[in-house]
Structures are given as C-alpha cells and as structure tokens.
Length: 208
Ligand code: GAR
Image 1: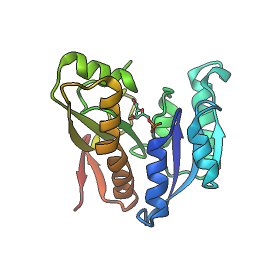
Image 2: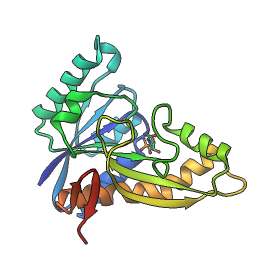
Image 3: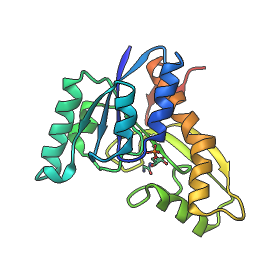
C-alpha cells in the first residue's frame, strides 16, 4: 500500500477525481494521506478537508532559497510517511532534494501531448493558448514521472483530444480535462500503486 500526497495550487479538479476514484474502491493499493498546497487559498484544500484528508500549506515565498524550500517539502512529506507524490496542478517548481528523495515516485499531469507545449512557462491556460496559436488539430494530456528536467521525465500515459474550430483556451482546457486528465491521472496512479510501471533507460514499460 503506497501512501500518496497530492500537491496542488488551484481548483483541484484532478485531486477531486483521484479522491472519487479512491472512494469508489478503485485504488486498491494506494491511499491519499495528504494534500499539500502552495497557497492557503487553493480551493483544492477545501476538497481535501471535506473528505477528512490531512492538509499542509507550504509557500515558496516564505523560504529564502530553493534549497531551504526543498528541504522543508521533503521533511513534510517524510513526516507524513509519503511514498508517492502526485502533482495535480502544482505550479511551484522544486529542486534536486525532492527529486532525489522520490526517484520515479513523483508524477505530474500536464495538459498537452509532451513533448509539445511543455517546459518552462507552459502551465495551465498558457498551454492551451499556445496549442491554439500553433493551430494543432489534436492536443491532449500526459502523465509522466518527474525528474530534474521540467516536463522531461519518463512518460507514463497519454491521451489525444481533438481541437475544435471554435475553441477558446478555456473550452479546450475543459475538454482536455474531461476527456483526458481526469481519467489518465487516477489510472496512472493506480498502475504505479499496483507496481505495474517500470522505468528502464528513461522509458516506462507498463504491465498489462
Ligand atoms: C490542469 O489542467 C493540469 O494539467 C495543469 O493545471 C490544471 C490544474 O487543474 N497543470 C499544469 O499545467 C502543470 N504544468 P486542477 O487544479 O483543476 O486539477
């Protein structure tokens, strides 16, 4: 059984789908133990509290540098005996100490088909704005392991979503969430908890 921490910064719809998945009994080998937010006003914290999940808030601005923030983050995760870290709309960049503490044990959901529209500056609505600007006809979502390259870790699952002629960044974001993110993230977390994901030379292999 893996103890899971979900790291959030905003609305937390991906967190909600993970909670629902667990409450439906579909996460046999994982348990959401902690929701950690980068700001105290994240609505995701309300979602956690209403399901009696422990919460913590860690603001980057309260730490002098990246190293001390990283150390605080690892300490909180270890205090809660966390085995698997899920980034679900977590907008704060962390550094080496966190990556080293959880090798192939941090996953992120990103709202595009990596390696398109990813890396520094590509987060939230900006990703969809860039996709529309480029005129792609298909976009999607990716769940990947996190390493020290921004959006560069091994890809676990991806799902394509069509772009419509009259899409705005907002309508595209909604469709990518509904059709891809909300299903992919629980599925990937469940596969990891079931020990069905292996990483060999930077590539994941998923056991059927
Ligand atoms: C999601 O679309 C997620 O993919 C994105 O932020 C949104 C959070 O929504 N994450 C990134 O852009 C990370 N680079 P939520 O708070 O409703 O789950």
